[in-house]
Length: 462
Image 1 (cartoon, rainbow, N blue to C red):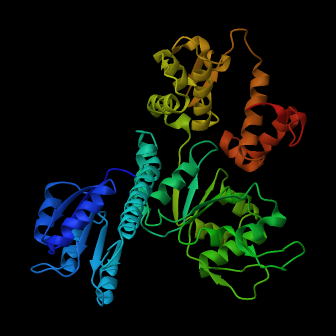
Image 2 (tube, rainbow, N blue to C red; image 1 turned 180 degrees about the vertical axis):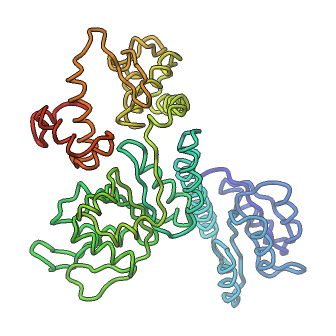
Image 3 (cartoon, rainbow, N blue to C red; image 1 turned 30 degrees about the vertical axis):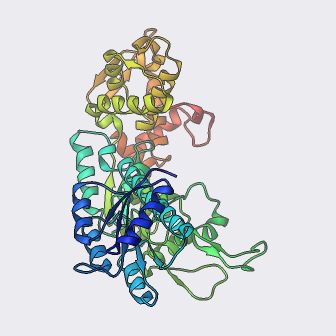
């Protein structure tokens, strides 16, 4: 039991003396006062953990004292002492924010229990607030590092929409931080104290998708032994994050559209729809507009999802952010790994010349590996993987790493074609536009190098 500081207020001096003695015996520090005005002055001058006050007092009764204490602070617990026959007043005190009330006369063990319970509840509220602030700080927009114009424009747009319930669509390559952005939107919104539920649309088998998202009733199908809530009901009042939404099968796209339009879901085995209050944040690394043109994504759903689009640029397009990101990640690693390692500026220069196909995730993984295996206290250029140490030639907007031993121009052309095809999921029209050539030219060159989806060449690391 901690040494808490208490204020005891009662105009009955005999009772005040007895209670003061008993409370001190319980191990608490107590200041006995005979009026509410004195108590308020003490609270303004110093900090206390608990106030115990009689209900009936001249000048300022216990209810008025409680009101004024609440005006000063929402956190200080207050226990009200009542005489027999004034239970209605005690109930009113609880409605005003009193932690507890005791009816006179009461035993010493009762006052001990009331004090302990009130202090424990106050500690719990303070810890919950601390954790809530820590979560908010963890996902505040300041944690999304970058000073580049394109990245700051995305952050500015995100901050403008946090307090609205508009559906958000986050686009960007794999590893750019789409989930982190989604969490920042949620934890900076009015829904921050409600659930944030992640659904990886590409990881759930299509036959289980409906029951995972919307749940089912007992007996809805073979094996449904109990009722089960789906992700949307679990997230009630909060946010559902649909990661890789482009992977949703067409039949589930129809059901998601219904959720967006009607704010209700159909639970398997339940004949009646259920209302849901959730905000939907979706993310994808695919081009939904192209999927729409191909017929694999619904046009009506596309426009419903892209009410508030946010695009996170790839790391190679915000090279000026790499030093900031590097030092930010190194600071996190220092805390998590409990190992302090410096980083040579030439390493950061090498980072800025690299293309980062895996984006921020690749940078984080590389830095962790370098810190873990470092023995000197400083990461130097010699510790970098070979592909980061190779000289880089910049030709227009393209970065090329030229090996010392030379290379085959035809092999380079083949690799570029393969990288463009894989980048656009083997869609020839999109890949051709990306390369600035016609589709027929692309097909000719694919035939020249025998490039086919699913062939052995797909093992090439691009």
